[in-house]
Length: 122
Image (cartoon, rainbow, N blue to C red; front, side, top):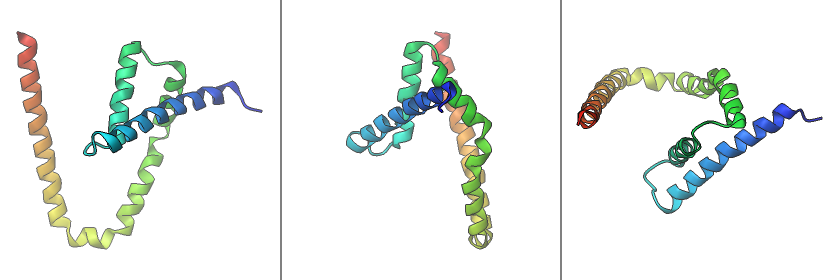
């Protein structure tokens, strides 16, 4: 017997997959440089902004996913363990790339914030 809660979860998952599918279609036919899930997320954000809220089924899925975020890191951890010898061999290059990317990310974020804050003062 299917409980009422599972109908809510299925509805929320269908909504998420629908927007991801739309994003994939847009990526395939119009914007091949942007990943489909990113476009789908932007479309979902726009949809939620137009509705001025999140419906119950989408909220339920988001809460359930956020309670199990740890499971999403299992494949990454397996990859790290699997490629440990390669990571050790290139540790200096990886560390340099991480440091440079963090510094660039902070700098670009600061510049964007500065530009956007100038526009809001006018």
